[in-house]
Image (cartoon, rainbow, N blue to C red; front, top):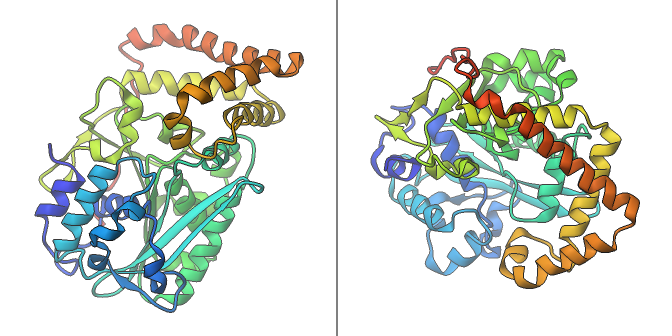
Length: 379
């Protein structure tokens, strides 16, 4: 299987020979999920930095990859990058992470100083914390969310601290943050940005996409997503899409994991269209959200996450690890809800299921797949 690990093992050209582009962006975006140990204090803030290859110390692995989605492949990727002349001399600076349950905010970012000049600003996507997932769903009724505001402040600070051209990107929510920050930056800063990458990142409300600052960003924006994407199709989008083949065909939510994205001849394996399943899910979720008022969306997700946090659970890892205790507690908490609230929650879920049944015939129509606009791949 050729993926971002094999790319980092085999593509040894330095950036002066082979400029940064899509696969590099996905790799650096994924590295932003790492949790830097306290020993790397010089990478926090902007007055110092560490070399990427210095991260490869076994005693720090438990911290680096705690609660990451795919720690095994993440370690393989770091190992390849630490040995590769393309990446090993990069320096990391500006590492920032904020988790604030009261503000329903989860944010993290780091900046990679590219050999030869310029920088890549990487925004972390949703981690394993429940507050991070709650903030994601808040996008359906709140704009901007706190992490988006933090992303803009971070971009402005990074631009004032580093020189040269800027690349901005992220995976999942990180891709959404990258687009928000770049679109809302001052014109002088936007002029320094070469490219903005959103790797399977959610979109924005329609009224946002129609604004002048977002439309002006489109020529610099590249959005990549797997062939049966779910996350990357949430909310509206106006950008051209680059669809990537994945080696996961059954459980499509796992296509969100970039280690399943296929690479051939040093670039993503492109797919002409999204799958029918992706279109089906997109139609269903869009219609469901459209039929819910913003007030009801806020109420629904608020109740849902209050149930998940019944046992004081803070992360999906905790929820999964102690599921024998947590699941019964969630069920009991559901039963103990005020009858009116419980009826609202179950009724809203029932409406989603009914919409799924309504759109099911679309899976069998030959014309359901959408022909995507072409995206310029070279820049």
